[in-house]
Structure formats: C-alpha cells, structure tokens
Length: 151
Image 1 (tube, rainbow, N blue to C red):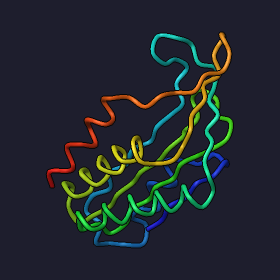
Image 2 (image 1 turned 120 degrees about the vertical axis):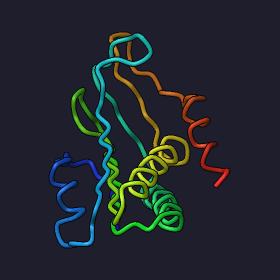
Image 3 (image 1 turned 90 degrees about the vertical axis):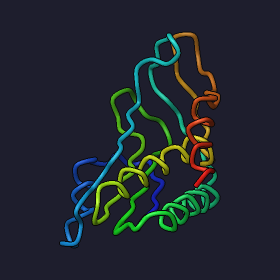
Image 4 (image 1 turned 180 degrees about the horizontal axis):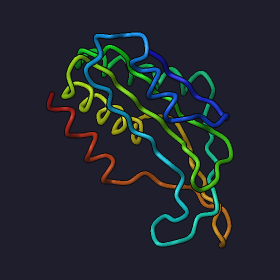
C-alpha cells in the first residue's frame, strides 16, 4: 500500500495494472483518476498550481490510507497526488483500491476521495484569463465526507 506526492506525470493505466499484477486473490479493482479541467465555476482555467508541505502532506495522506484499511478488507490501496504546475487534461490524482470483492473496493475508493477533498493539505491556485486565484473548498465536499462519520 502506498502514498505518493509527486510533480512527475503518471499513467493511470500503469497504476491500475499494478494494483493486481502480483496478487491472484484480487477480485476487484476500483480506481478514480482526477484530471485538470479547462473550466471551473463558469470560468476558463488555463492551468493549476498545487502547493503542499512536504512531510506533512504525506503524513495526512497516510492517515487517510490507514482509516480506509481499518474499514475495509483491502489487498492494496494506492493514493497518488501531483503537485506543482499542471495543465488542463493532465491527471492530478489517482486513488486505486483492490479487494477480493467489489463493494469494499468501491467504498474505500470513494471514502479516500471524500477525505482527500477535505482533509489533505493541498492548496490549489487556478490560472485564468483574469489572473491567478486560490480555490476554496466546497460545501458539497464536506457533506460527502460527513456521510462516513456514521460508520
């Protein structure tokens, strides 16, 4: 199981393949790949800059990973998040979960993404035609995370 924060591009296909390549007990792999869009909230986006605090970010992602492993019987869990300058169309985040059964993999992947959107210490700045602007968290992300508190 791994947590990675990196500037380098990655291949979602390679990341997916790695989740089951060496374990014949895997019955399900569920993955999420987030991409940089060329729009947000009705305005054009030319790119993003993601900042983080090295060490602190990996520790926070490790806590999210540990929580997912406690909740579901996972065979593998991969959390990969890019930082630095990114252009529209580039992958920015990858979460992949493998398990013997699909329900655990689906739920773990969704849980990790909900927690990444609200608990991970990343700061996102959009490059727009009007200049750069910081992106604020969304209430819908907080609501998505809140559903996991019940169990």
